[in-house]
Image 1: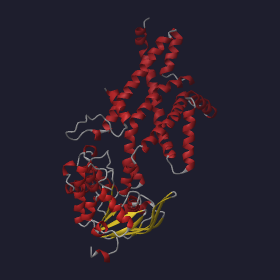
Image 2: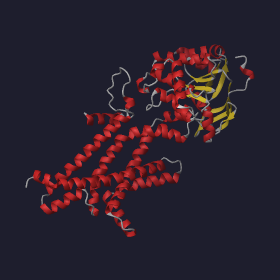
Image 3: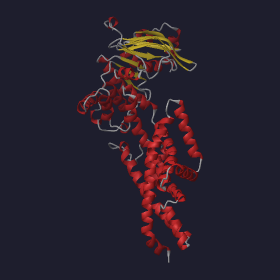
Length: 251
Length: 245
């Protein structure tokens, strides 16, 4: 995107180090995400993609480095963390819908408890978003009665209801049966086209190719390569990048 | 005099004593639930000493006989204040059950999938609201059948309070057999009353479980029959289904 380079980054990560005990998971990672940009993180498993994503909204606490989201420094003090998190939507591999609430209640809960919206207002917003992800008729169903693809679309609607500045997707289609992957990717592509800022960890290379503004390739706890999808996916410069893509094409 | 003549003759006595047993157990369990919640909270605390205290309490209570706890509390308290047997018994039963209930609460909370807590926190929900809106309601669903089981045990365990001279259900049968020299009949008779109480309690718990797990019911056209399965592990689900069948 030509215009984004002048803007302030929405997510700015500097020199991120993350260790679990003696195990180094991220070793000095820098990442900027600009407004309206779709960044897709790819790389072999164990490279640190999901951990990096989870650091952005503080689900993982970084060992050193700095993170800024929407101009605010991310610290782990409860009120600061909650405020920043309410600006970041997160979609998980395992959907994580609340099983004791209906679909609409899933989408309404944080609107009411965090944003202080009225029941009527949050219900209207839930219905509007359900319509957008193609599940308008499921508002009063319980998550148990939905397919995986439907549950994931509800999870996307639940995150969008907070009007986030940025959406994070952590392998959103990895837990889905193959025939259900398409419907979730379709919703995500529509979101990208509508200008949502997104950071996506995925193994879906076709999605990366079609929706990403920038592909970031991680390997061995670091970013080894980044750039437009054609460049990273077709003519990778680094040895690790070439090895990873060779692996992919062999499958 | 036959068993059935005595059953009719002693019915008013036993029914009255049943009320004493029910009141005793209800008071004890009410205290045990509050105490158990506090101990479970301590056991899950990030503060070491609180955790150790909870672990020690649970260990001591589970490692010693209830009858010893009742005597220790009864004689221990009467050293300090004069306390009616009802309250000494209720407190001992409460202390005893609180340890087990704390463990039930703790395992219920730990059974809530970590991903659901993360999803809640990711929406900007505070720790307290996450507890109230997601963790507690889901933990309640998993713990309800186990809690019901503990309540049933508590009803029967309350018979031990007879040893500190409380005329509850069990003591009534002991008194009567001392008069009529029919221990077999009297203990059979009192067992019938316990059985009735337990059956009623089981029914109430099953109803509660069913109404709490309404999200399990199919919304449209799917094959489930609303077995009240909820989030409970499969082995518990099967057990309740059998009990209801």
